[in-house]
Length: 272
Image (tube, rainbow, N blue to C red; front, side):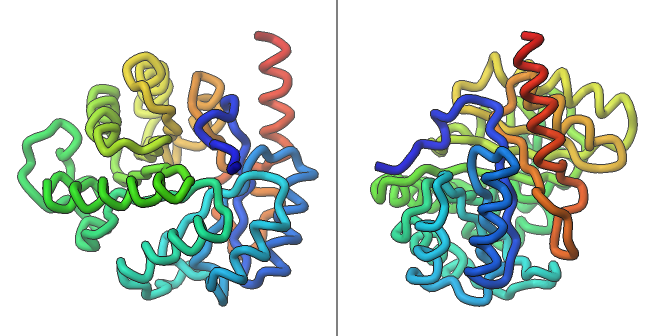
């Protein structure tokens, strides 16, 4: 039986793996295990091969549960060029290969939403042209159907949105409640913090999310002032910290060092 990511105690330290081959991915997974990760965040779009056999080889080599994602970016961050059908098919192959869950982005089945909001601007969270937010009922129905398909296959769904703009507490909470209706197992939202006020607002937002949203939420801000939220928000109740075991050319440089984060989290637990 697959480990349920949603039931792991928060904050979960996710070791991010962005590698090109199965052997490199397996090696990096082992590094993450020894670094103290509690789960693996596997970027399938970086892999040269994503057939079921290759994915199974990687997943079977991990003693940690794997969240499989396809953000359509190659190792060098260039566009991988997958269609939505190809991208969602990769999720199903990962589940068949044993992944505990998939990271399904908010724009799924509506590619125009990758770069900006499309639709009637009638919600607090649709202000400012956010990315990856879909309000079209037809698209939402397709997303819900796909989520149930993944659930039926025995895996979980992390539903992620990266609006790419600053958002206040009310906007983020209302967005999370809107996404929760799709029935994901975990919600991930990443906004922006361009100054100290927006950084502090992100801390407040996390405390309210924990109280108001039943589904576990991973929330932090990017941007010049967002990095602190990557570690503070998980300590305030966020579900997952996305970490890098060793930085390389393909890493997300804003993500945190796994060993440092483990030390911070372990010491915080002692204090609490």
